[in-house]
Length: 141
Image (tube, rainbow, N blue to C red; front, side, top):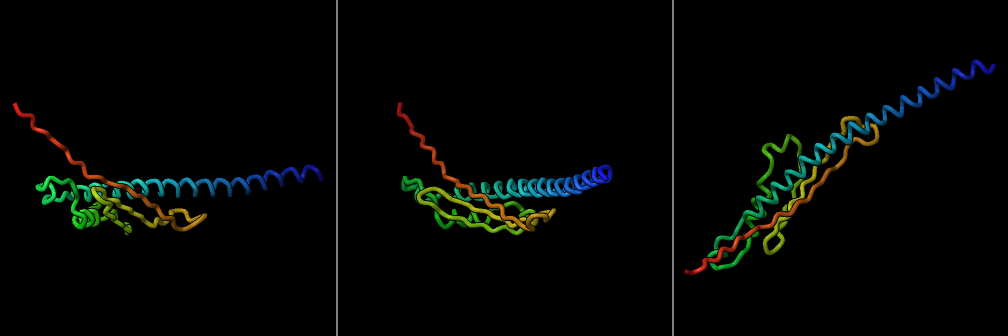
């Protein structure tokens, strides 16, 4: 009787390990997809924030002030982006933060390739761009 039971333990162990390895493969595949998409979303948020921070108010510069044009900053932020968006719909929110910052938040719902635990996940990145004004002082001779 003892000899017949030892084979059953091996079979149960093999079945359990099959489920463990399947779950591990799903986790690694999903994590890889999420990391790639996060890098894309993060790059787009940075690009949008920098584009918005380049909207310098030229009229203010001639008055000796350093400021961004709020409407133009948000417009540039919203219009910038990766060409075609990589074929994935993304939600974008651009915000002007006085006096010279633009914040871009980009999020995307990602369909996971191996939907063992869940079918979709959301990746989100927020980046802030700030205008830089260089002051050059001319020293008289």
